[in-house]
Picture 1 (tube, one colour):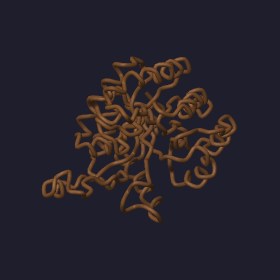
Picture 2: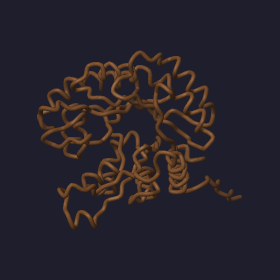
Picture 3: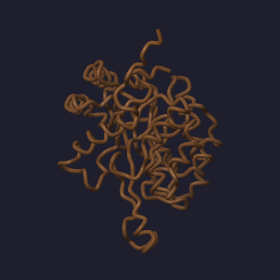
Picture 4: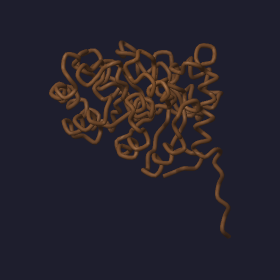
Length: 296
């Protein structure tokens, strides 16, 4: 494992798949080392080979594409499934081997009753990924759903992960993990990561602040927000611990900041918050790489 210059774990951010070259050209000078390129719901008719070439030309030797993704509902939307297929087949053209997104949900059924449809959709997609040397990473956002009434994504709890990975047993299926989504469910992210780190293929850099004073006073049903999504460096999580757990497990990949959620560092302060987060995560990673002295 090459840890020189921290090549084992890069720190980057998210960008729109369709507008990637122009956006990356503007923000690479800030020092971002990797990018996840994302599409909302559908990939559409994007010319992926041409887009991949232009994007990699912009990255040059300064950054990499860590992953690509489509965030729709593949258990109910066939066009989203087609998008997954296209991205799996195109990942290597972007220089990456991870494709990310929601697992999907049959919204009329509770999570446990989704497993038949999950197998129907993800069995073939997992096989396609295996055949092409690609790994699939499920994002963990609940999208406002619950166990009994899921929305867009059943992969929002450890119990669901166990069912999913038992239903489709494939080394190509894993997680796009972040502490925020665990904290929204009041799950301890550090204990969760220690248990599931072997299935973590990509990490979203998104944190949270839990307002325990509100919970203790009004509970979870008082109509007030009790958890704020935060950019790393402004939330409750010890990212040094997260990076240590990842490295102890031999994780190699990227932590890509998922911005556009912080209630304070947003709008005109969006990139200010993201660049602070980049520097913060680089410090949690150990700071600038220092070669060891020779022993002779």
